[in-house]
Length: 431
Image (cartoon, rainbow, N blue to C red; front, side):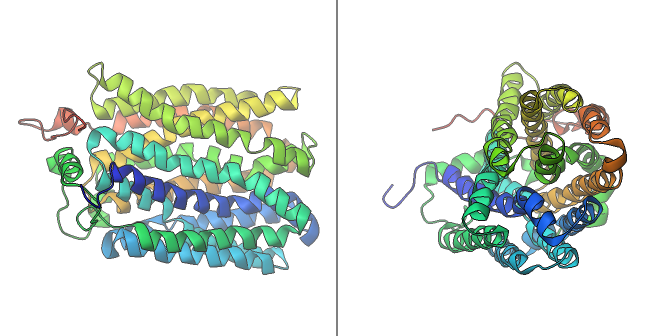
């Protein structure tokens, strides 16, 4: 064991998670700074919806990000995208009007679309099947944690300097992570600190039918598979919740609940802390069901369904009088969303080959961000006339439809594949 690191796979997913923290910190910076930025640059809600829409259009190119990661490798690909998003974030501090912000947000979306495909590729590469849910949950904590850090960091930067400094700080942190990533990450077959025992554990826990085929993924063949649509369509319905929490809640708290900047710094991060708990709760539900004989895919569908039921609490955010009750319901929404989101995202590594995982995650991410884009544009165009309440009601019911689609479209290979079991996974004990 000389020179070997115990449980190295968890150190690697921790490194990926840190990248996700900074990915979501940089993308959340504008949402937190929005009240100040919009006032300073004289931007209205409609223009702001176009700005957030530009980001969603950019991040919808996740299939391109996934294809690049599958083609040139995770280490180099993730480093290139992270360098780009860090520099683009810093450039936000130079914007002088809404048109400049719109262009920068579009470019940022393209670069930041790599996060989910990269995380899923790392999970599929480094973890046996029985640990992928927990590893995916750990990775997705990065998304929540970045959004947790954004309100206090951005508010502090604005109070000490100005809103432009907030983007410079966030971008600089991203560049520091790139250096750490290039220094520390390697794939399991190349990492010199990986012990033989852990390498065997990872290999023994992989499904035979999901082994790397050694070819580039075919987009058309993936689009023809119903399991892809069983992941993509529920994500289309689920992700508007995350977009609303990230981009619109600070404005909602300011304009409807009359919070000032300090109150936003105190409360706007709480739903994302709840989301962190949801990242671990979803995999825990899956393990609970598996121990009772439920197949892996059905256990994931069960966890998604539970999260969808909990999401119905979002319907009442606009109807409660107390702003603190509204914050509590937003926390429930964050918790429920990540409970189901981490579950459906992880399915890409359960249903597709390793050389397809990043591409599938990216393609599903296209539909997830399309949902965010449509929802954000509707809010921007209608909130002045109908208020926020109809949108909270919609968020409370969309995931129930997603659960129906997940159960209807996805086929469980453990049940549908003929012959002997095609996995070697979940019975392998940890050393």
